[in-house]
Image 1 (spheres, protein in one colour):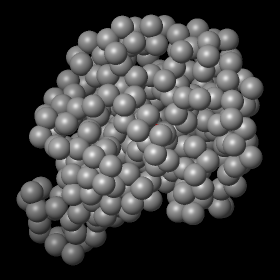
Image 2 (cartoon, rainbow, N blue to C red):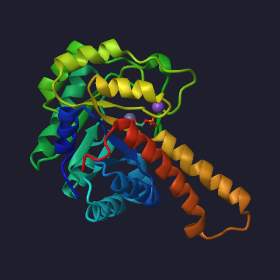
Image 3 (cartoon, helix red, strand yellow):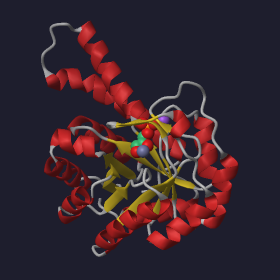
Length: 283
Ligand code: 13P
Ligand code: ZN
Ligand code: NA
């Protein structure tokens, strides 16, 4: 079922749970997320980065996720994750996508606002939802690598001004999470999250959830996070299961067989994360 991301996020905000956004990379991972969401009756966001669109073809990803959304009883949306090109966003919005992240977090505050406002204006015309980011996460996402010491935490007052001046629908914040796994246990700045939550009324988004202990994620949801982004743990489970299957079955050459265990491994993580976000039985 297609329901706008805004509606899903507002329900999560009102009821105190989070909607998980899973990065998909192909049909197999998209199906793994959709089937698990259906089993657990969880709304779910299928996120795709520019790299995923380049690899699969933008129209193909649209077609896959739209078709899946047409068959599930739970709300399921395609979301443009970490998009930096207005042209790519326009292409996807024109193709029917209604959930967009414009990531201009690497620019100056004023430049970030200027870029985001253009995307908001374009996307709101058709009733779409826009997420933007303030602060800079460490780690690796697609081709972008940010050294941990160059990561920038979100300033609460700036977050308030940013949300008001851009007119965005949700805000991605940097409170100590990073894309990818962590070299040592991440220290999350809960105090900062509390302050941001007090000043900013729109739903808050946590990026970089892979590798964060469950208790810490739970705490961020209690403090107001409404959307949790998970990518790396799905990539690891898929590739580890696939590798193990091919090692155990060295002459296997049927993708319908060797993708099965990889898909099951992804489903297991998706299930864990849905339960962690407490988004089950919400749809
Ligand atoms: P992880 O890869 O750390 O789960 O981060 C995912 C993410 O933030 C996608 O936008
Ligand atoms: Zn992210
Ligand atoms: Na992470």
